[in-house]
Each structure stands twice: as structure tokens, then as C-alpha cells.
Image (tube, rainbow, N blue to C red; front, side, top):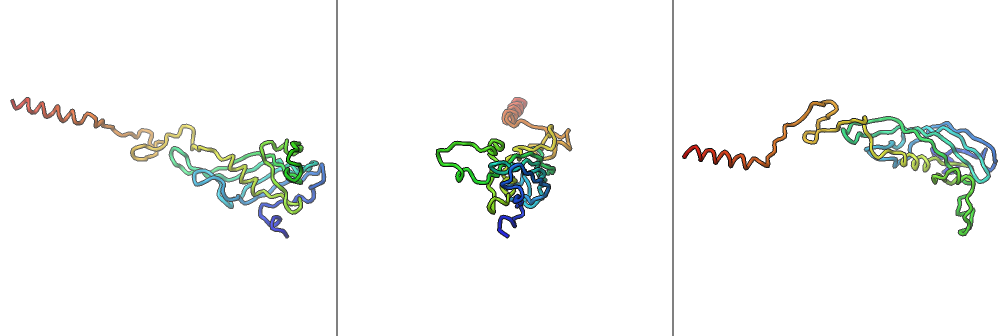
Length: 200
């Protein structure tokens, strides 16, 4: 067994590859690759990612239409509350029988049918002579792109007190009496003048 076929992200497509019009369904869990997000928002390496969809064989390669569901961890960017949930996304991926640079000359600008389907750039090579598709790169790439830049525990999260760090969602009436020290010197001068005036 080759290295590609033994990978935990490998899917055999031998029964549909090079057979136009054939379909292969996929309904399986794969370990999340490394490098999806960070401690603030992301998917932990090794967590199970569910993929459900189908491969369709066309003249130029295989088209994968699939729904991806991944467990996502996050931290609210306002109150720092730990959050968990799932990230759901639909993808269209093209696996050409030959990569474009092998299929065309440098001056050839033809576009194969599968690349029109996967116009977002989701194109990945097949391995083992076109009999194996690997989900490692496509899971990482698509989930990284789908990670939100900012996560809130709720739309109106009040965040943390800027002075003491208390959670304002749990203590909505919390506040600090703010004293403006800019006039403290003038107040001291006024008191001194009043004292001198009373002594005269």
C-alpha cells in the first residue's frame, strides 16, 4: 500500500476515475489537519471533521460536492469567554486527472470543465496514478478560509471593565467613580489661598 493510500485523509476513487458519468458517495470522518486557526479561533488538530457528499466523474477529472462539518473552538473577543460549536460549509473541489501544467503548454489558455466548476481555486491533484484523493489539504485550506476574524458570545456582549477586568455581562451595573486629577493642583492652591486669607 502506498503512502498516499494509507493516509488518514485518503479516499479511494479507483472505481469512478476515468469513468465519465460515474458517482461515488462519501460520508466519513477525517482527523483535522494541523494549522487550522489558533488559540483564539480554530479547529484542534485531530478532532473529527465530517464530510458528506459525492464525487462525480467528468471528462477531465473528478468533481467533489460536499458539506463539511468541523468542531470549532473560539474565545469571545470582548469578554474572553471560551466558546465551542461547529463550523459548517459547502465546497466544490476539482481533482483533475492531470494537473494543468502537465495538460497544457505554457501558451495554452484553455480551461477544462472541472476548473469552471471549482472557480474558487479548489483544485487538488490525485495520487497513486489517479486512484486516490487526499482530503488533507482541502480540509485545511477551506476551513482556514472559513474561520471568522472576530467571534462574539452574543451580538451585544458588553466585554470586560477596562479598569478591573470584571465581566460586564454578569455585572451590568458595575462602574467606577472616576476622579479627574487634572484639577487637583488647583484645588490644593485654592485651599492654601483660603487658609492664608483666613489667617490675615
